[in-house]
Image 1: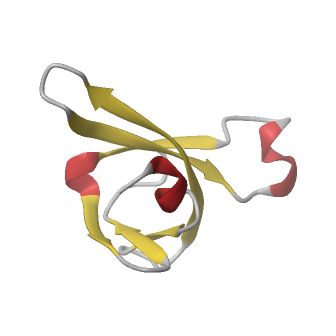
Image 2: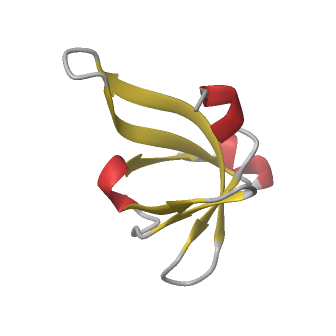
Length: 78
């Protein structure tokens, strides 16, 4: 799967059903070739100007990657 394919999917938190945003980056361990985490940019209008608008989600927090959404189990303040 390519990064551009992940970037088209909405990221949804399974704990409360909230839409967190879209994948904007991934962190890869180049020694193992495995993805460590994804970076999600929030859909919060002006939050980019007035605070942190990104969430780092560890790979083990991803529950399911579907055709249109990525379901994660995380605390939004992480």
